[in-house]
Figure 1 (tube, rainbow, N blue to C red):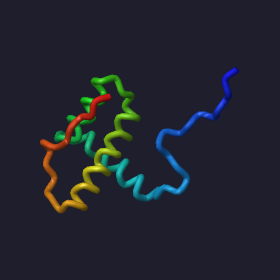
Figure 2: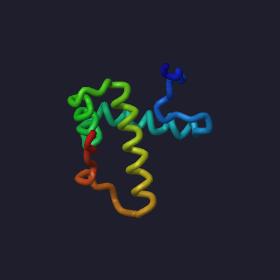
Figure 3: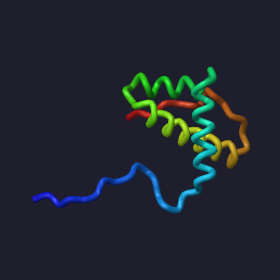
Figure 4: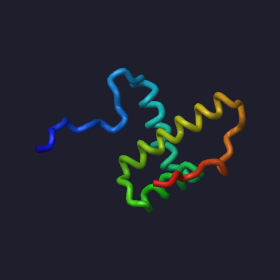
Length: 87
């Protein structure tokens, strides 16, 4: 008999920074409304069958990763480096 486990949350934890999370979610929502590389990334996620809400969360995570990379390396943002990972 299989053991019953509660449903796992997708990457969420209790000690996260709520304000920073809202900043990145707001940036993702703004990026979806304007043409550019992030909107193209979002539309690519939708074409691959991702639900719009999950696509926005994925975009917010991508923006956070890009921001961290730019902050650590000091390089300017290059849209050519923005790529879709294989699923």
